Image (spheres, each protein chain N blue to C red):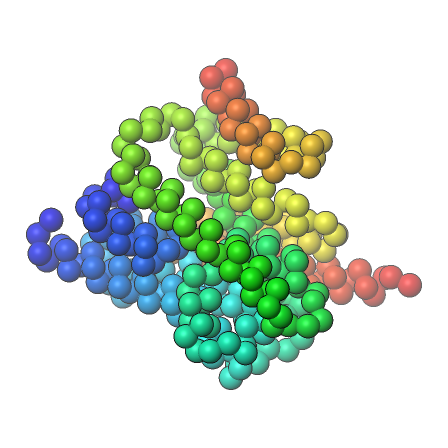
Length: 202
Length: 109
């Protein structure tokens, strides 16, 4: 963020308040170019659309809590908690147990501190890490480490394949719209593959 | 930074914070008024892996092949990382192995 010309104070404020890596990485080049604020808002919203999908899936587990608690649980959610939570409780028959709440908090609270820690570390030391170390590749590898173990059944593999192809073709679209298109295509492919599989099963 | 540039940056941060709040907490707050059918919920199970894949792929295979050496290195290193995971079932192995493979390949080329 500092490398985009933001002051360190502004970078810290952004990291703490926005708390969305991909939206920040999308918005920074636009801010550098002096893009109108509505465009920055629209771009950030599109990149964050996946959280609406995540929220819709997570909401039944937390509907009984107060307005303020739900606000906090939602605001501090993350990609990671969705992936972990749905892997563990996706097929749970009882929704809204204490165990689920604590599991959720157990992911988002350390996640928030770890993310902020490394974000601040990056803001204040980023200039000292030689670019040829390519530490950003570690972030890609970490995402792979989350995704690959989840691909267990055939429909999921089909979904990943279709997502990958569409994501690759869609990178030239503005505002990272390719990301949203690829997710929609991947979900559709997964559903179709599942239907096909269950129709052929005896 | 001048005052005007400051207020521009603050405005952008405020709007992006609003984005985070609306997209993440929106369904948590108003979900009961926007019910989802079961088929939709089943479909949503494919969303997280799809989202991760859609973030990873452009990282590994960017369009601009101008820096072709870089994309070759990342792709090869990612392939090595997947092999390591397949053999060891270890996420740490995937990350450490992938990073080491990246440095080794970049050094060799």
